[in-house]
Image (cartoon, rainbow, N blue to C red):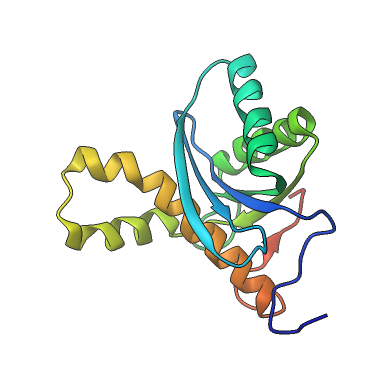
Length: 161
């Protein structure tokens, strides 16, 4: 194995990061080699049946190998009320798509996304429309980089609290 490339999952394909929200879900996607993180879209939440269809299509269209669901945790690292909702969504996503789901610390990704957009002079509406997708890209880049460095830095969180 080449130690300059990130460890890959057993299944070939892309990694999709999920910035979970109760109204919107930001998504970012890796390249097939699981090295580069790119913004994908912001998904407006719908009914469970519509969401299931949408995520199944995403898996098929993009050859998704794994989902990384961001866990909103407190600065101390303790899980928040929203963490349990994100975990519940991750379990649903795994059951619905048959794709592995990992959870990863998403502390400060939205703040970092806002800071990155500030110089662009976007209106509040345009920033809001892009924030979740950019936060997902930051989450995915951190996740991929941590694997490249041998999991130093923010560690993936256990599947259960």
